[in-house]
Amino acid sequence: MNDNSRYDANHDLNSSEILSMSLKRYLTLICLFVACTSALSATNESEWATLILKKIYIQTGNFSIELPQVQIRDSREFMAAYSPDRNTIYLEQTALNVCRSFGKDAEKALAFLLGHELSHAFQQVGWATNFISYDYQEHSSIHLEKSADLQGAMGAILAGFDIRPIIPSLLDRLYNAYGLTNRRATGYPSLEDRQTTAAQVSQKANELWHLYQTANYLNVIEQHQMAISAYEHILQHYIGKEIYNNLGLQYAKLAMNFSGKNSDPFIFPFEIETESRLSKARAEDLSPEEMRIRKRYLLAASAYFNKALGLDPGYTPAKINALCVSIQLGRFQSVIQAYESRTLAAGFNFSDSRTYALADLNMIAGIAYALSGQSNNAHFRTAIAIFDNLSQDTNKKVRSLAFSNKSILNGAKPIPPPMGSCPPDLTAGNNVDGLSLFSLLAKPGQFIDKEKQTEFYWEERLHSIAQVIRHRGAAFPLQRIVKPRPSASNGFKIGQYVNEFLASHKNLSYTTIGAGEKYYLHFRHCRTVLLIGPNGKIEEWAKYLD
Image (cartoon, rainbow, N blue to C red; front, side, top):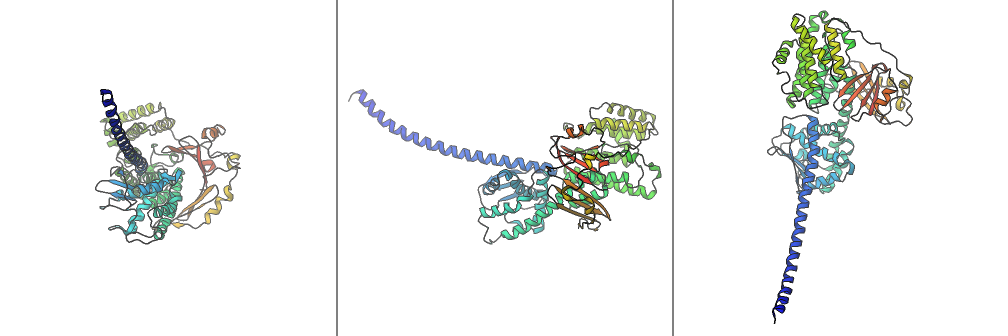
């Protein structure tokens, strides 16, 4: 056998070995690929869930705990659970698959599970929770679980995940996926019991959502006492920094307006309608009893702003509003000292372009100097200089506020603008969905306060939602048009760019009220409010009786 033959024989043998090794490597690579893909899939699922959780967490604004981590598990024991020791929400892959089965509503389904477990984190329970066991688990109760359902549902809804329509079907699919549909297992509520509870939660979440929307409109229209009743009822079921801040605003504005007299000579950044207040009698005419009531309202406002800051110490709106109330309580010298020591802006985040915190802070300082300037010429001049500087601001509202405060400081008396008339195309179609607002006046509602002084009624119609809130006999009917009407004859069209509408109604007077990324336009003489989305389009509009 020559060398070549030996080479060929060895070559054949090595080929077999190489083939065997190649197959092994191939199979190993497949296993590695599957494992890596599985790990990558778990990572993607975890990231997806974390993004949804973060939106709910930020919207709620309770930063007293850190954002929980999210981990995916292959077990089939709890669907979703929260571990306080690890500050982690565990989601089982089976439950995630069920959420995925909802297609375009998958995020909403997952938001309900995450919102529920996040609420347990806010409750600061001292034990690991279990979504599938609900109130059957040790230490838990039906009250605690329903509270987590409601808190989680409202947090999800306010974060943009409207989970209300899918809760029953989500529970159906979860129980089916876990094989619990037709049997009563020890340690778990039956599907029937769970659905009964879910129906109650869904109904309550629906009520709270509509009440929240009504309260926001009441804020815009300056119906403070009714707004207070609404927000306070919401707080019994959902705790969020925005609700605390809005409540504080209502009390601060109520302190300004309850007596029918003008108790504050200057205009604060949080005010909406100012002309009518400033034209009233000055604060010197407040009686001692009225002064006590005013102080009580201001202290309530301060307490609610502090509660908002207790959840999120960096919450800019509450920090600004708390400073305004501090001045209203007569503590303007402390604001001046902080301004002169350059500590007034400490702890503020000025990177958010949607807020005008720096301008608002300077406006507050200007008001403090203006109040002190009544007996201090140097402070008078400083106030004028601050208002002059703010009059050059790029924001129209800031410029207008600065000009008005400077005019007041110089002794000018504001004159309320004429009421004006409403164009025919905006008064047309008053009976949207065949509803007259006057018919709502007699609708009986559910009491939303312990004193049984405030009632709330709402009903859904084809294109609108009819609502009425009644406080101590005074009724406020409101109809929100939330869906486009093909045959609408009025000038407000959902989905239309608001600038197009304003361009065709140049003589209309209105007030702009900020609402995060959205804002309201209030046409007082038309008794109409538009809600404008971040894209500049009309999202919905409402008409009311006052």
